[in-house]
Length: 349
Ligand code: HEM
Image (cartoon, rainbow, N blue to C red; front, side, top):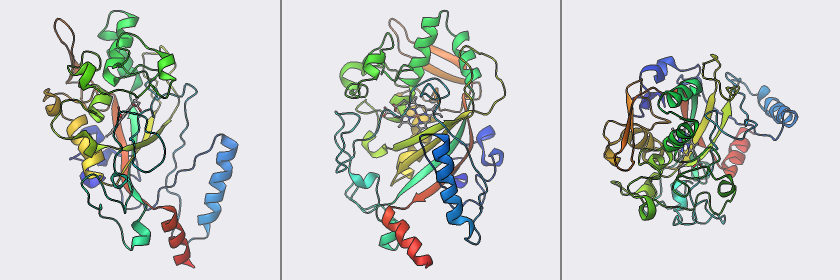
């Protein structure tokens, strides 16, 4: 990923020479994630992993990141994540958005036809590549205090502040989408898996009066909105979680703690999926007619960003947006399928 940093906008304070070691070095060979429902179980899983590799010559742990879900179940910015996922053909599970026509499995899993009808290139031999995929792993620091200060300084009431925060994301903190509930949060709607992601943009909100075209979720998945190109060619499976302590509710001053998210962006075509979204949709505003604007949540603004909120009778344009996120590191990984893992294990014997 370090070699592609400029393309995806990792420059300045986000550049690889500022990354946390060992990100961006030649030393990273394997990434392993261990997930468990509580700390005791996690300890057991990590011990299993340690026993498995301790006798393997040349393998040592060079970095470890503790992650957790916050008690609120939300990201460090206070918004629920992990709601919208692509509807994948053949997986046998309903998509999160019933209005999304299923997307070819080959967009996400190697060895199957993709949306163009071709087979994405994969590692060989076949047993290694098939059923695998690629993942862009990122450590992203979030500047929660800077975001709270910006929202406070640019609004004149708690209601306005909450609305501006939601306009930047495209959802309310509960996850309820602005497209379906533009004036206020609706936790009941958010808790309903059949409704929380059941919307398109063109029908009710083409001009972005509810969810601005520049909002994070509308940029990263414009669905059927009027854009140049086809959003279906740029879909991602996302997995992620938070690290670091939450900044207590209402605190506006930075306490210096490192907090943020580990984001994992998965797909068979990272170039036209993760990299395209990052370079064209997050870091550029051409596709929505605001050339100088970047994603208000995930963009790198450096204090000079702008964001346009369509309103009647006149739109609102906010200036001097600072960066609310900093890239601390990232790697592109091949994710083998289960058969490939077994094959690799047998090779060793
Ligand atoms: C930088 C920190 C980031 C934060 C705090 C963040 C937070 C969020 C939140 C709260 C949502 C709404 C939940 C949902 O719809 O599932 C979301 C959705 C999404 N984000 Fe991010 N995100 C970040 C970075 C990124 C990046 C770098 C990308 C891609 C390059 C990305 C891609 C997406 C996508 C594709 C969606 C779903 C949009 C949809 O289908 O409607 N995010 N993100």
